[in-house]
Length: 273
Image (cartoon, rainbow, N blue to C red; front, side, top):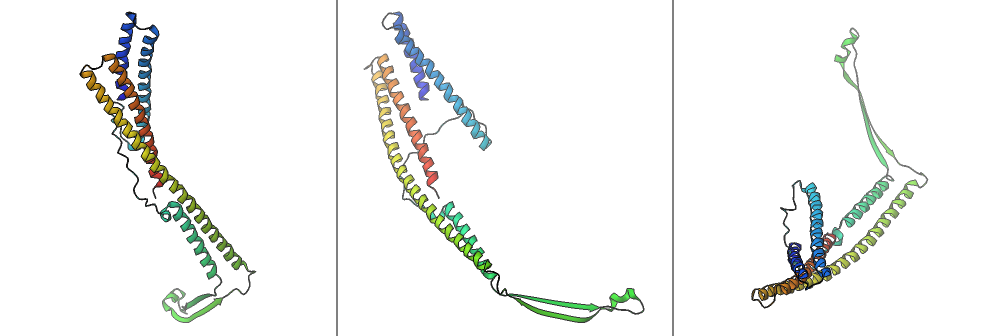
């Protein structure tokens, strides 16, 4: 919208400079310079539209809805406030949970290895039937009677296996301790990184507040120059030149605010649990 306003003003100033050049009041260089501003602004607007079309096409891929540059309307950014009390819990981070699961898995492996050292007890049983018919062998199945029942208890224990089981247990314990150290080191790095993000968020928030206040002052000057022109306190050429300067300041401030706000949103995502 600001680029469109600038383009309209540049075109009007270019026409004014062209007439003044014909009248011999300004040089041809000055007239051409304003014409070039018109061409440059048109090119910048077309470039912005192309970038927006590409971004909207990417957005359509994820949402399944169709968007066009003409129908697209950007909402104002939400007002940025000072970050609230930090509620970051390092123990609820994905890294903490991942290491916690790995440590639990290793501890379960240690318990399984220890159980292998205990004696193993097995129970077995047999229940046997005998069927017979001396006159018709095909009728034997109808003469089944329990003839034998066996039950037994077997206990097994390795007296010596070259300390293999103990070595496996020790190895698993070392792996568990290594995971615990890695987890502590990783969580410490995450805590430091998060503290840095929080501090950066505060700085960026204050910076956005300052830029927003400057933008408010520029908008007040724009309203003031409009009133001065309506009251014929300033001429049209001076009015247009001052409006161009203020609109350019407004555009640059908006770019900075948008960039810092986007970076702040990214920091919000990175600092979440």
